[in-house]
Length: 358
Image (cartoon, rainbow, N blue to C red; front, side, top):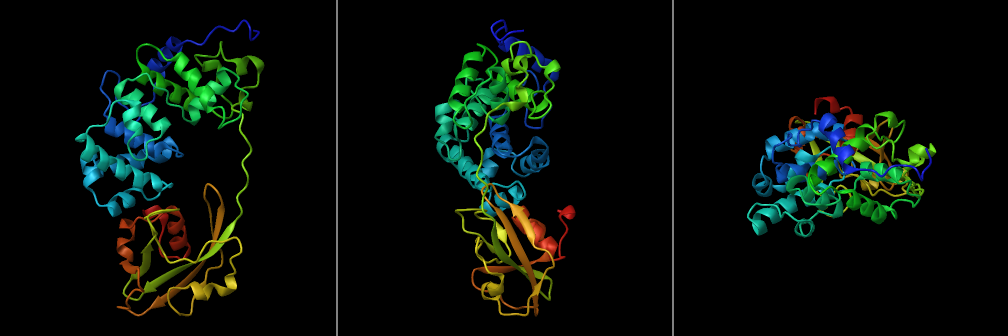
Protein backbone atom coordinates (compact mmCIF):
# COMPACT_ATOMS: atom_id res chain seq x y z
CA UNK A 1 0.00 0.00 0.00
CA UNK A 2 1.28 3.46 -0.87
CA UNK A 3 1.22 6.33 1.60
CA UNK A 4 -1.23 8.15 -0.67
CA UNK A 5 -3.66 5.22 -0.53
CA UNK A 6 -3.52 4.83 3.26
CA UNK A 7 -6.92 5.32 4.90
CA UNK A 8 -7.26 8.01 7.60
CA UNK A 9 -6.89 7.00 11.22
CA UNK A 10 -10.21 6.87 13.06
CA UNK A 11 -10.80 7.22 16.79
CA UNK A 12 -13.61 4.67 16.54
CA UNK A 13 -11.19 1.90 15.55
CA UNK A 14 -8.96 2.63 18.53
CA UNK A 15 -11.89 2.79 20.97
CA UNK A 16 -13.28 -0.52 19.68
CA UNK A 17 -9.87 -2.10 20.30
CA UNK A 18 -9.72 -0.51 23.76
CA UNK A 19 -13.13 -1.88 24.71
CA UNK A 20 -11.80 -5.39 24.09
CA UNK A 21 -8.24 -5.05 25.39
CA UNK A 22 -8.12 -2.31 28.03
CA UNK A 23 -5.69 -2.97 30.85
CA UNK A 24 -6.97 -3.52 34.36
CA UNK A 25 -4.98 -1.06 36.48
CA UNK A 26 -5.50 -0.27 40.18
CA UNK A 27 -6.05 3.44 39.48
CA UNK A 28 -8.32 2.94 36.49
CA UNK A 29 -12.10 2.99 36.86
CA UNK A 30 -13.98 0.04 35.41
CA UNK A 31 -16.10 0.55 32.30
CA UNK A 32 -19.15 2.59 33.23
CA UNK A 33 -17.69 3.79 36.55
CA UNK A 34 -16.88 7.43 37.29
CA UNK A 35 -13.12 7.92 37.75
CA UNK A 36 -11.85 9.37 41.03
CA UNK A 37 -9.85 12.52 40.17
CA UNK A 38 -7.59 12.00 43.21
CA UNK A 39 -6.61 8.49 42.15
CA UNK A 40 -6.14 9.54 38.52
CA UNK A 41 -3.95 12.48 39.51
CA UNK A 42 -1.84 10.51 42.00
CA UNK A 43 -1.22 7.72 39.50
CA UNK A 44 -0.22 10.14 36.75
CA UNK A 45 2.33 11.81 39.02
CA UNK A 46 3.76 8.43 40.02
CA UNK A 47 3.92 7.21 36.43
CA UNK A 48 6.07 10.09 35.24
CA UNK A 49 9.41 8.56 34.21
CA UNK A 50 8.46 5.31 35.96
CA UNK A 51 6.97 2.06 34.62
CA UNK A 52 3.51 0.71 35.40
CA UNK A 53 5.05 -2.44 36.88
CA UNK A 54 7.19 -0.43 39.29
CA UNK A 55 4.36 1.92 40.27
CA UNK A 56 1.63 -0.63 41.07
CA UNK A 57 2.82 -1.74 44.54
CA UNK A 58 3.76 1.82 45.55
CA UNK A 59 0.41 3.14 44.40
CA UNK A 60 -1.56 0.54 46.34
CA UNK A 61 0.42 1.19 49.53
CA UNK A 62 0.13 4.95 49.00
CA UNK A 63 -3.66 4.80 48.61
CA UNK A 64 -3.98 2.61 51.69
CA UNK A 65 -1.97 5.17 53.65
CA UNK A 66 -3.55 8.30 52.11
CA UNK A 67 -7.00 7.25 50.83
CA UNK A 68 -8.19 10.80 50.12
CA UNK A 69 -6.65 14.08 49.03
CA UNK A 70 -7.51 15.45 52.48
CA UNK A 71 -5.58 12.64 54.18
CA UNK A 72 -2.58 13.36 51.97
CA UNK A 73 -2.77 17.12 52.58
CA UNK A 74 -2.86 16.65 56.35
CA UNK A 75 0.01 14.15 56.49
CA UNK A 76 3.46 15.28 57.72
CA UNK A 77 5.90 15.81 54.86
CA UNK A 78 8.25 13.20 56.34
CA UNK A 79 5.51 10.57 56.10
CA UNK A 80 4.81 11.44 52.47
CA UNK A 81 8.48 11.25 51.56
CA UNK A 82 8.83 7.92 53.33
CA UNK A 83 5.87 6.50 51.42
CA UNK A 84 7.47 7.71 48.19
CA UNK A 85 10.96 6.39 48.94
CA UNK A 86 12.18 4.15 46.13
CA UNK A 87 10.11 5.73 43.33
CA UNK A 88 12.79 8.29 42.49
CA UNK A 89 12.49 11.86 41.16
CA UNK A 90 11.63 13.05 44.67
CA UNK A 91 10.56 16.53 43.65
CA UNK A 92 7.39 14.78 42.47
CA UNK A 93 6.59 13.77 46.05
CA UNK A 94 7.09 17.31 47.31
CA UNK A 95 4.90 18.69 44.53
CA UNK A 96 2.31 15.97 45.18
CA UNK A 97 2.04 17.04 48.81
CA UNK A 98 1.92 20.74 47.92
CA UNK A 99 -0.77 20.10 45.32
CA UNK A 100 -2.91 18.15 47.77
CA UNK A 101 -2.70 21.04 50.23
CA UNK A 102 -3.69 23.51 47.51
CA UNK A 103 -6.71 21.40 46.51
CA UNK A 104 -7.89 21.19 50.10
CA UNK A 105 -7.17 24.78 51.09
CA UNK A 106 -8.16 26.57 47.87
CA UNK A 107 -10.67 24.25 46.22
CA UNK A 108 -12.49 22.67 49.17
CA UNK A 109 -10.94 19.29 48.45
CA UNK A 110 -12.18 19.09 44.85
CA UNK A 111 -9.86 19.09 41.86
CA UNK A 112 -10.53 21.71 39.16
CA UNK A 113 -12.21 20.06 36.18
CA UNK A 114 -10.45 21.98 33.39
CA UNK A 115 -6.92 21.95 32.01
CA UNK A 116 -6.50 25.61 32.89
CA UNK A 117 -7.60 25.11 36.48
CA UNK A 118 -5.39 22.05 36.89
CA UNK A 119 -2.36 23.85 35.48
CA UNK A 120 -2.64 26.39 38.29
CA UNK A 121 -1.93 23.69 40.89
CA UNK A 122 1.64 22.98 42.10
CA UNK A 123 3.49 20.31 40.16
CA UNK A 124 0.91 19.89 37.38
CA UNK A 125 2.25 20.49 33.89
CA UNK A 126 0.70 20.23 30.46
CA UNK A 127 0.70 16.43 30.29
CA UNK A 128 -0.76 15.82 33.75
CA UNK A 129 -3.39 18.53 33.29
CA UNK A 130 -4.46 16.99 30.00
CA UNK A 131 -4.53 13.47 31.41
CA UNK A 132 -6.56 14.36 34.51
CA UNK A 133 -8.94 16.61 32.57
CA UNK A 134 -9.59 13.89 29.99
CA UNK A 135 -9.65 10.78 32.18
CA UNK A 136 -11.26 12.15 35.34
CA UNK A 137 -13.60 14.74 33.81
CA UNK A 138 -14.01 13.60 30.17
CA UNK A 139 -12.76 16.92 28.86
CA UNK A 140 -11.51 17.05 25.23
CA UNK A 141 -7.85 17.31 26.19
CA UNK A 142 -4.63 15.86 24.79
CA UNK A 143 -2.51 13.77 27.18
CA UNK A 144 0.82 13.26 25.42
CA UNK A 145 3.22 10.97 27.26
CA UNK A 146 6.04 8.80 25.90
CA UNK A 147 3.65 6.11 24.69
CA UNK A 148 1.51 8.63 22.85
CA UNK A 149 4.56 10.28 21.31
CA UNK A 150 5.64 6.94 19.92
CA UNK A 151 2.20 6.00 18.55
CA UNK A 152 1.57 9.35 16.88
CA UNK A 153 5.11 9.66 15.51
CA UNK A 154 4.70 6.31 13.79
CA UNK A 155 1.12 6.83 12.71
CA UNK A 156 2.00 10.05 10.86
CA UNK A 157 5.73 9.34 10.26
CA UNK A 158 6.66 12.59 12.01
CA UNK A 159 10.26 13.37 11.11
CA UNK A 160 10.74 16.20 13.63
CA UNK A 161 12.91 15.21 16.58
CA UNK A 162 11.67 15.13 20.15
CA UNK A 163 11.22 17.20 22.20
CA UNK A 164 10.64 19.73 19.41
CA UNK A 165 7.99 17.51 17.80
CA UNK A 166 5.67 17.67 20.81
CA UNK A 167 3.52 20.62 19.66
CA UNK A 168 2.86 18.86 16.33
CA UNK A 169 2.08 15.58 18.09
CA UNK A 170 -0.33 17.38 20.36
CA UNK A 171 -2.07 18.90 17.33
CA UNK A 172 -2.43 15.44 15.78
CA UNK A 173 -3.95 14.05 18.96
CA UNK A 174 -6.45 16.90 19.22
CA UNK A 175 -7.42 16.41 15.58
CA UNK A 176 -8.27 12.75 16.27
CA UNK A 177 -10.21 13.36 19.50
CA UNK A 178 -13.73 11.91 19.27
CA UNK A 179 -16.76 14.00 20.25
CA UNK A 180 -17.50 11.48 23.01
CA UNK A 181 -15.26 9.43 25.32
CA UNK A 182 -12.15 11.63 25.37
CA UNK A 183 -11.06 9.98 28.61
CA UNK A 184 -11.24 6.50 27.09
CA UNK A 185 -9.46 7.79 24.00
CA UNK A 186 -6.58 9.12 26.13
CA UNK A 187 -6.26 5.80 27.96
CA UNK A 188 -6.59 3.83 24.72
CA UNK A 189 -3.63 5.72 23.24
CA UNK A 190 -1.58 4.99 26.34
CA UNK A 191 -2.51 1.30 26.27
CA UNK A 192 -1.76 1.01 22.56
CA UNK A 193 1.74 2.38 23.10
CA UNK A 194 2.34 0.24 26.18
CA UNK A 195 1.15 -3.10 24.78
CA UNK A 196 1.18 -3.00 20.94
CA UNK A 197 3.17 -0.04 19.62
CA UNK A 198 6.17 -0.83 21.80
CA UNK A 199 9.67 0.66 21.33
CA UNK A 200 11.06 -2.62 19.98
CA UNK A 201 9.26 -5.27 17.93
CA UNK A 202 5.85 -3.56 17.79
CA UNK A 203 2.97 -5.98 17.17
CA UNK A 204 1.77 -4.18 14.06
CA UNK A 205 -0.44 -7.07 12.93
CA UNK A 206 -2.57 -6.61 16.08
CA UNK A 207 -2.79 -2.82 15.89
CA UNK A 208 -6.17 -1.21 15.20
CA UNK A 209 -4.35 1.50 13.24
CA UNK A 210 -2.11 -0.80 11.18
CA UNK A 211 -3.74 0.26 7.89
CA UNK A 212 -3.31 4.04 8.25
CA UNK A 213 0.11 3.84 9.97
CA UNK A 214 2.58 5.57 7.67
CA UNK A 215 5.67 4.21 9.39
CA UNK A 216 4.38 0.63 9.11
CA UNK A 217 3.64 1.10 5.43
CA UNK A 218 7.20 2.32 4.87
CA UNK A 219 8.65 -0.40 7.13
CA UNK A 220 10.34 2.20 9.33
CA UNK A 221 8.23 1.93 12.49
CA UNK A 222 11.13 1.12 14.80
CA UNK A 223 12.98 4.26 13.74
CA UNK A 224 10.26 6.48 15.26
CA UNK A 225 10.03 8.67 17.19
CA UNK A 226 13.05 10.65 16.09
CA UNK A 227 15.06 11.81 19.08
CA UNK A 228 17.89 14.25 19.50
CA UNK A 229 21.01 12.57 20.86
CA UNK A 230 21.53 13.05 24.58
CA UNK A 231 24.85 14.26 25.87
CA UNK A 232 26.42 11.81 28.29
CA UNK A 233 26.76 13.23 31.79
CA UNK A 234 30.16 13.36 33.46
CA UNK A 235 30.57 10.83 36.26
CA UNK A 236 30.71 12.33 39.73
CA UNK A 237 32.43 10.78 42.74
CA UNK A 238 32.10 11.03 46.49
CA UNK A 239 32.29 9.26 49.84
CA UNK A 240 29.42 7.94 51.98
CA UNK A 241 29.85 7.32 55.72
CA UNK A 242 27.84 4.58 57.41
CA UNK A 243 28.25 5.16 61.15
CA UNK A 244 26.74 2.65 63.59
CA UNK A 245 26.36 3.26 67.29
CA UNK A 246 26.88 0.21 69.51
CA UNK A 247 23.29 0.36 70.71
CA UNK A 248 22.18 -0.41 67.15
CA UNK A 249 21.49 3.02 65.65
CA UNK A 250 22.69 4.48 62.36
CA UNK A 251 23.64 8.10 61.72
CA UNK A 252 21.36 9.88 59.23
CA UNK A 253 20.55 13.38 58.12
CA UNK A 254 17.92 15.02 55.92
CA UNK A 255 18.90 16.54 52.59
CA UNK A 256 17.87 20.14 51.83
CA UNK A 257 14.31 20.47 50.62
CA UNK A 258 15.33 21.90 47.26
CA UNK A 259 17.61 20.11 44.85
CA UNK A 260 18.45 16.52 44.04
CA UNK A 261 16.80 14.02 46.44
CA UNK A 262 15.37 17.01 48.29
CA UNK A 263 13.88 16.24 51.69
CA UNK A 264 15.05 12.62 51.67
CA UNK A 265 17.12 10.89 54.34
CA UNK A 266 20.74 9.89 53.78
CA UNK A 267 23.86 8.79 55.54
CA UNK A 268 26.40 11.63 55.65
CA UNK A 269 28.27 12.05 52.39
CA UNK A 270 30.89 14.30 50.88
CA UNK A 271 30.16 16.57 47.95
CA UNK A 272 29.61 14.74 44.67
CA UNK A 273 32.11 16.09 42.16
CA UNK A 274 33.84 14.96 38.98
CA UNK A 275 37.20 15.87 40.57
CA UNK A 276 36.58 14.41 44.03
CA UNK A 277 39.79 13.08 45.61
CA UNK A 278 39.26 10.00 47.75
CA UNK A 279 42.51 10.63 49.62
CA UNK A 280 40.83 13.54 51.38
CA UNK A 281 37.67 11.65 52.32
CA UNK A 282 38.49 11.68 56.05
CA UNK A 283 37.99 15.45 56.05
CA UNK A 284 34.37 14.92 54.95
CA UNK A 285 33.56 12.30 57.62
CA UNK A 286 30.97 13.28 60.26
CA UNK A 287 33.32 12.28 63.09
CA UNK A 288 37.10 11.70 63.31
CA UNK A 289 37.28 7.90 63.50
CA UNK A 290 39.10 4.94 62.07
CA UNK A 291 36.92 4.28 59.01
CA UNK A 292 36.87 1.02 57.02
CA UNK A 293 36.55 1.32 53.25
CA UNK A 294 34.26 -1.10 51.42
CA UNK A 295 35.88 -3.14 48.66
CA UNK A 296 33.52 -1.94 45.93
CA UNK A 297 31.91 1.47 45.47
CA UNK A 298 28.19 2.00 44.96
CA UNK A 299 27.27 3.07 41.43
CA UNK A 300 24.04 4.89 40.65
CA UNK A 301 22.75 6.70 37.58
CA UNK A 302 20.74 9.89 37.84
CA UNK A 303 19.05 11.53 34.87
CA UNK A 304 21.92 13.90 34.17
CA UNK A 305 24.97 12.10 35.52
CA UNK A 306 26.33 8.79 36.86
CA UNK A 307 27.54 8.72 40.46
CA UNK A 308 30.11 6.54 42.20
CA UNK A 309 30.20 6.59 46.02
CA UNK A 310 32.93 4.92 48.04
CA UNK A 311 31.42 3.55 51.25
CA UNK A 312 33.17 3.89 54.60
CA UNK A 313 31.92 2.22 57.79
CA UNK A 314 32.64 3.07 61.41
CA UNK A 315 31.26 2.60 64.91
CA UNK A 316 30.96 4.64 68.08
CA UNK A 317 29.94 3.83 71.68
CA UNK A 318 26.31 3.70 72.74
CA UNK A 319 24.69 7.04 73.58
CA UNK A 320 27.19 9.00 71.48
CA UNK A 321 25.37 12.21 70.52
CA UNK A 322 24.77 12.92 66.85
CA UNK A 323 26.67 15.80 65.23
CA UNK A 324 24.70 18.99 64.61
CA UNK A 325 22.00 18.60 61.97
CA UNK A 326 22.10 14.80 62.12
CA UNK A 327 20.32 12.07 64.06
CA UNK A 328 20.79 8.48 65.15
CA UNK A 329 17.96 6.17 64.02
CA UNK A 330 17.63 2.59 65.30
CA UNK A 331 18.37 0.11 62.54
CA UNK A 332 15.05 -1.54 63.35
CA UNK A 333 13.32 1.68 62.27
CA UNK A 334 15.27 2.13 59.05
CA UNK A 335 12.34 1.02 56.87
CA UNK A 336 10.38 3.98 58.22
CA UNK A 337 12.95 6.50 56.98
CA UNK A 338 12.54 8.17 53.56
CA UNK A 339 15.69 6.62 52.14
CA UNK A 340 16.10 6.85 48.35
CA UNK A 341 17.31 3.81 46.45
CA UNK A 342 20.85 5.22 46.31
CA UNK A 343 21.09 5.26 50.11
CA UNK A 344 19.60 1.79 50.37
CA UNK A 345 22.43 0.62 48.12
CA UNK A 346 24.96 2.36 50.37
CA UNK A 347 23.60 0.81 53.58
CA UNK A 348 23.34 -2.56 51.89
CA UNK A 349 26.96 -2.31 50.73
CA UNK A 350 27.91 -1.72 54.37
CA UNK A 351 26.30 -5.08 55.19
CA UNK A 352 23.62 -3.65 57.46
CA UNK A 353 20.49 -3.95 55.37
CA UNK A 354 18.89 -5.98 52.61
CA UNK A 355 16.65 -4.28 50.07
CA UNK A 356 14.68 -7.55 49.85
CA UNK A 357 13.31 -6.90 53.34
CA UNK A 358 12.03 -3.39 52.62
